[in-house]
Amino acid sequence: MVSFSFAQEAKTEIYLKYGATNEGKRQDSAMQKFRDNRLGVFIHWGLYAIPGGEWNGKVYAGAAEWLKSWAKVPSNEWMQLMSQWNPTKFDAKKWAVMAKEMGAKYVKITTKHHEGFCLWPSKYSKYTVASTPYKRDLLGEMVKAYNEEGIDVHFYFSVMDWSNSDYRYDIKSQEDSIAFSRFLEFTDNQLKELAARYPTVKDFWFDGTWDASIKKNGWWTAHAEQMLKELLPGVTINSRLRADDKGKRHFDSNGRLMGDYESGYERRLPDPVQDLKVTQWDWEACMTVPRTNGDITKIGR
Image (tube, rainbow, N blue to C red):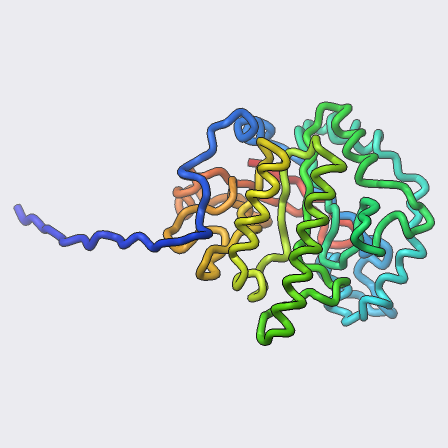
């Protein structure tokens, strides 16, 4: 019989001020409700639903919410689409009933995608439903309708905002730093506004957080998570928001999940062999159905 022995070096814990905030899985009732919901509907709806995937006669393959970027449309030109925003046949109640009939227990709604157009009348931006022919608070109507059907409402929120001149993809100068500080204050104000206007929201699902500017400001991602959890006890936050002191995203430099659940999966389910570690944390998979005009996505755990 041959025996082998290996010396295993102890892993050194890295000190992090803005790393993971949870020790293991959250076990409170709000998080358990998040797990039990299982199946949800993810609704993408913004100005990009008007042109779909076409701009100036050219069709761009892929998700329409990226059309502005792909077609290199200036923000002032893109935002003129607001004059066409008038979904007179929209019926939040019908949408909510349909979701209930399909078995959905929660819905994620794009409050604001990368383009910067807000589905609620934000007082911090001129690019909102209030400045369109439709005028009505679409987000508020959906929150009310889905809640009345017993469906939890989650908010998608893009931190990256192409409409805001203070947004920076990277911080390379003092001027960039000053502008981005203003942008983070603007973002704080919009998040606090959403929490105050719609206190029944159960989850914030962040996106647009991969740029170097966010990675260099991990403190802010930790601050935003804490701020929302203080304003809305029990609220859940996805891993896409977070960056640690060293710019690591989703999982901190010690390998711990940041946020309450991993939202790194897109258009796939965890592999039963490669992703065995997902049993150590909560996760959510986004399975996009179409990749074009105003796509609707099924999501679940």
